[in-house]
Image 1 (tube, protein in one colour):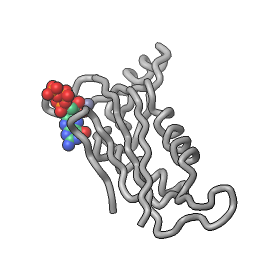
Image 2: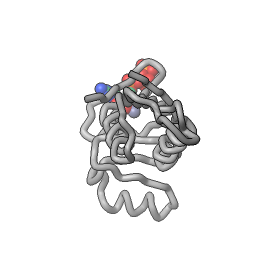
Image 3: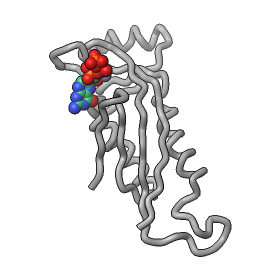
Image 4: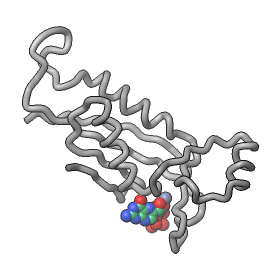
Length: 139
Ligand SMILES: Nc1nc2c(c(=O)[nH]1)N=C([C@H](O)[C@H](O)COP(=O)(O)OP(=O)(O)OP(=O)(O)O)CN2
Ligand SMILES: [Zn+2]
């Protein structure tokens, strides 16, 4: 089995709604995302011969996902009052609303699932919320 790994990161703000503790406040992280893909076989011909996937495609596709979240306020849908959200948007802040609570666990599943939908045979996705704390999703 061949396993390829790439990583990328984004700096964003979030908060955990209904959390008891400091993470209920808006705060930021440098989220580091590591993704591994796997394959029994290598591409047999053409410019990508001998590769599972071309690293340049793999890192570009991960970076595109990560860049969409970079320097944004990431909120779980319906956890801010409409008028709060409107005021933030009116001020020109960029807000990303996600369907999940923005935890490291949910981000790891998010990156896994989106890259899988793009055709990658993902083995696992790991998201570091701090240098010491990470969550991994695999099936
Ligand atoms: N299982 C999870 N637990 C927590 C998550 C998470 O994603 N998954 N997230 C948070 C918060 O986002 C929080 O920012 C993390 O805070 P903390 O662990 O306290 O990290 P710090 O680096 O700020 O810790 P210090 O010890 O204060 O340096 C909480 N839990
Ligand atoms: Zn946090």
